[in-house]
Image (cartoon, rainbow, N blue to C red; front, side):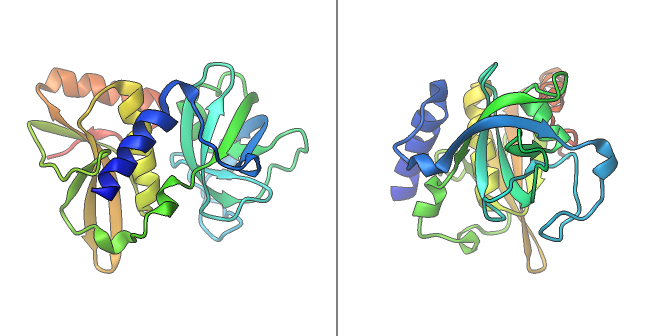
Length: 226
């Protein structure tokens, strides 16, 4: 019950209409964002990962690695959730470097540099749960309901970080107004993967339309699930 209420608060009040919470101002930063050149693809980031232009990560000078940020393009109010895994930018006039997919999500690619608002997401940190709560094969919607696959389903994006998956699913639910966006849990040995999905799609034509829409948002590997 506590988890359900919390997710309802998070989805309905924190992503809608650009509203923010009463978090400390130290968790909010304004500045200019840029994005990585494609030449960095595969190169090592500051935390030892390989840069992936199709993931939703970012470089920041000071935020700890694995901090989740809500990045909002102040020109169009489009937003994306990214995870910090690198240090930068090296130009003092900029506060964050985004992957190409993250930049695509907020429609900044044609401009190169845009003004943004950064907000550290700590909502899910208040829950005393870990990824051990989620079991193989479970599907959770953004309201903390367990659901089942229905009709056609498409895979939108996958991550190893459950918080990132639920943050992303939540923002997509609000943006698309499609209530059947959820997170599917899969285990592979000791590793867990969290796949953001859209289920309950009633036709191949509708599925193809959603796939096209999500790819335009930067989710390059969106596809129908078998």
